Structure formats: C-alpha cells, structure tokens
Image (tube, rainbow, N blue to C red; front, side, top):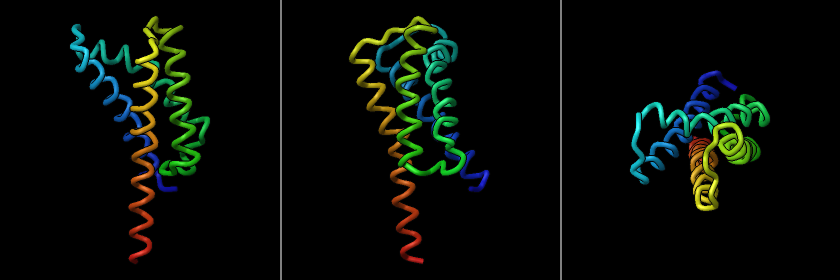
Amino acid sequence: MSERRVLTAAAIDVAAVVAFVVIGRRSHDEGGSVVGEALKVAAPFLIALAVGWVVARAWRSPMAPVPTGIVIWLTTVVLGLLLRRFAFDGGTALPFIIVASLFTLLFLVGWRVVAEWRESRVSHTA
C-alpha cells in the first residue's frame, strides 16, 4: 500500500471526526473558545480513532470499507464515547450516542464505500 494512500485515508478520517465535532458544536450554539472547546470534544474520538487504526491495522488496506472502515468506526464510537464519559467528563446522553454513531458510520465508512466504488468503476473502464 502506498504511503500516500495511508496518509490520505488518515487525513480523511481525522477530518471526519473534526467535522462531527464542529457541526455538533455549531448546531448547539456552544460558546467558549472555538478551537479549545472543539479540541476538548474531539480529543476522546481522535484518541479512539488512532486506536481504531491500530486495531484494524489500517495501513495495510486503508481504503477498504470492510473490514478496515467498520473496525475503525466501531472502535472510534465505542472507545470515544467511553473516553468522553469517563476520562473527559463529557455527556453521553442517548441522542448524542445515536448521532455520534450514525455520523461517524457515514463519514468513516461511507467515504471508503465511495472510494471503493470509484476505483472499481475506473478499473472496469480501463
């Protein structure tokens, strides 16, 4: 696997987690330091994302929705919520759990599905 693909996949995953936080904070009109508060909310999920990459050994097949994307997603959601609740003193109300799960599913697995589809189309037309 090319280093470029690994770095691209990692960057997209980080951007997905950051987008989740930024969109969530904006939709709730949360105040405080934009960067500081966003980092507080993102930290448990970014830590969990890094663990997910290790658990999935994502560098081997970073663009694969299955199993790579699924393992990264599940690890990011479950560990991220646990870290948020117990290490970062954040809320884990049921609506937040649902939104976090669906958003990260869409954005951590979804982009991989699209990338795989595009790659299959290109390889079939070549």
